[in-house]
Length: 403
Image 1: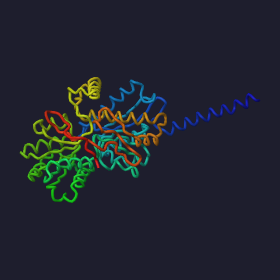
Image 2: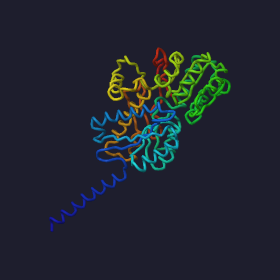
Image 3: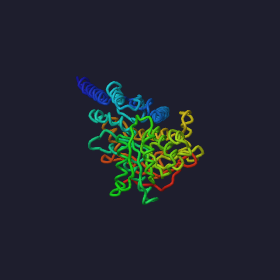
Image 4: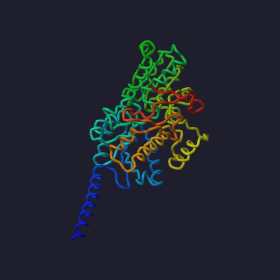
């Protein structure tokens, strides 16, 4: 009897532990003792398909991590779907990943409009969307959108525009501005950043601001109108490579030679500068936080990245910003998951993403570090001015602080 009475409590204690573990597992979709399953959506087709290089870099980096044993003993299983950069397709794909595939969280969906289309669903379901790809200021909203965090390649659109306006006015205090912007949240953020930086002078010094739709086949008519203003500064605020390349080329063909700034997402030699024409693109400036790649760089981190690309993505130019960015963001996710240790609940995944303190990543420029808090979801706040000269981007400023 004594042996039985000792055995029974021990048995029930073990049973309760097993039940608790099973319950915890059931409450954490996508997580097992051996795997972390998460979802991703990329425009592998459609008008923004050039940006899908980022998704390919994600997958290649996670393969490398898995070959080394994964994160805290768990392999990373990213399920990546194509949405053609169409928000309705993004919604459909996101629901499939969350409701059918049972992912633990969403990661790195490309674009402001696609991510906006799924924001309400993911927030309502309390599913984290880590490091979605957009610099829109709307993602820094922990009160109303606590489950969504972006990790852009530079400060958010509002702050990026402000940095560029201040830089331009320091060079030419009396400059007039012409602005081409994408007619969506991203483009409107850029326009807001310009107006905020100009303050009371905005109405006086903005010669013209004109918009375009992502689906427009060309922006030629808008460029001709803007060129007629003969403004001193031309701000090209698109996040799709095609429109950026067209704007650079057409403005050059008109003979208009203003000081030019391009959105950080378009500061890409392969997808924008080459299609626009290297001569036409020479002198273009932008804000960057990632190291500028060159084939002959001896920077140890860029050499490691070059070797990674050569071994795993040999058909993609390492100078492609979308690839270097994907490499960086994948590393950031590994940092977050490592911080989670064995608590991979959705709540803790989000909490760790909101607790990044001075994180240095190999592809970030000196002084640029990831910092977040429960009240500030902006991982990157600062950057450098870069200029496209001699077929590559070159740093031309000290570290510039966002607001």
